[in-house]
Image 1 (cartoon, rainbow, N blue to C red):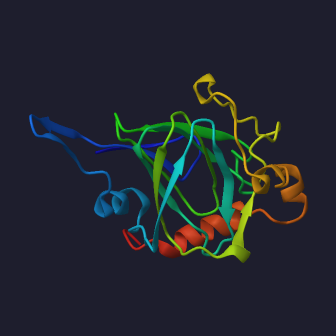
Image 2: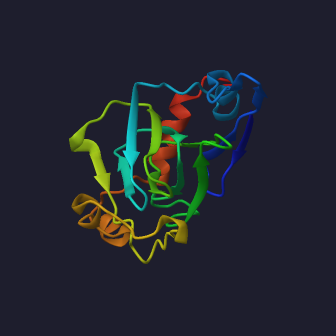
Length: 203
């Protein structure tokens, strides 16, 4: 398993090593000990989610209040999605920037994003099936969104997605600027303090 930090701090691309033979395929898609080495603490996984999306569906940008927030470990178990991590932590040097990882059932990559980061994806195939392991249970009052079509963020959706399909909840969500002005967004200082509170290795 290779773990590569993305251009947004506290987010990572995970590429597993695959073992194939005439029976099929085997791989390890999650290792708590490898992530503990990278993050300084194991991921405290508390819920597993699964979504199935037709081609063109956009889900996000979603995030949760910190503490404790909701870190996410995301994989595509069928089909393909382009997965986005967006830095929405006010005061971060990469605030408003984003990175992306292609998740599919060929390379079986995953993406990890820490608490306080925004998450979205667009389905590039029909029946794109996405698994999310998350660090807290769902709490509607602490869950928020940002419009994924916000021009100031400028997510680039590939042509393979075709016509985009979004929920009213996502299109009605505020822009990044409006969310920041209303005090809805996490701050860099609060995020880093929460990350530090979890560290158990080398402390």
